[in-house]
Amino acid sequence: MSNILHVLNGDATAYNFQETGLPGDVLVWREILSQGPLNSAIASGEFWTARANWIGQTFGESASEYLTQVVVPLEKLKAAYDEINLWFEFDLHCQANLLGVLALLANNTNLSPPAVFLICPGDFPGKNNFKGMGELTAKELQYLFDTIRVELGEPDFFVAARAWVQYVEGNAKTIEKWIGETTFWGALALVKPAMEAHMRRLQTDSRGLNYIEQCLLTLYQTGARTKRELYQQFWDTQPIYGMGDLEIDLYLKHLEAKSLIKF
Image (cartoon, rainbow, N blue to C red; front, side, top):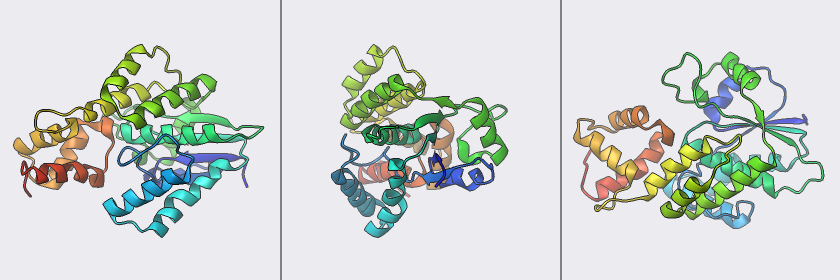
């Protein structure tokens, strides 16, 4: 086993990452903690059973697929690595997953904990509409490793723990209060805008629509009448959420159920 572990947020990044030549083992994080049921005890079996059940019911993935693709790889987080590099992006999808990873790492009680580093780009030189690391070449990923990688310390883990509790509890008012009172974000500065985005989607209007559904409905009413058009326009206008098409579909189904849109 290598003494270095790279945790990549999704297979899109993993494809080009293998060409970087960076030493170390790879763990591809495939969960979407930005959607579905959560509880703060992420290291418990109950947490992952609830996630497996929801993923299965929502996306049709079998329990064995979930175990193989999601749960088994996470065992690497308990291994005796000297260094762990976390490759996550600025959007809510990635930041929620990052908080989950940090919560798992905080549960480990190794006598010699690994040095944990974060590679989390909010933008990239020369890319005005930067969507994420999945669009970067191996050379560009190496550039991020060399220039923005930062080691996380105890204060960062404290911020992450507080953010994880707020995220899981999902109360817009307490999140707003917590954000307003938090003056130190350390290396996790991108958690703040992601949590603000989370707060917005927890709030609903008189029709029972949250911010994401309001945005999708507006796009539909102004001309985006196919799912493909809605996906693209939502990605262009709301990159902070970082959702894939299957995640957007969850919100579109709610709008369809209310007879506000029709395909």
